[in-house]
Length: 187
Image (cartoon, rainbow, N blue to C red):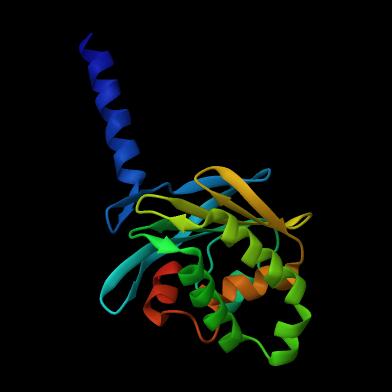
């Protein structure tokens, strides 16, 4: 009996030691996207005007410490957004669009217009995200970017070019928040 209790305690301690907590959000150190296991590369808190907006976590097939390396990594990827305060669809879209424009040329933005319209339709369908909601932005090479809110797939946007532009919001040369980019890159 003592051995069983000791084993249970050891397993519990190991499980807790591998869990990462950021901003009160417990993040798994690995996830499965498609048929691939991904590891937590890094995570941090997105703030704006001293308000905590969400915890962003980057999951990759192998660790990357440079934004361009993470963006260029082949295969499945995930950016998970753990919402810390209520946000409307318009707030999310405005924030995403503002940083995408900063990281793309006008011609690149124009070429992605159909995908941007799909993104807009998806967030209009979601309407509002609340504290505790989770938005997964999963890239699957064969189908594109799946947008999943609280475990429900809200849409899929084809195109690796669109995914790269979307992930540049956090990992590009002009990210939404430079210190968040560093934390997502494990720095």
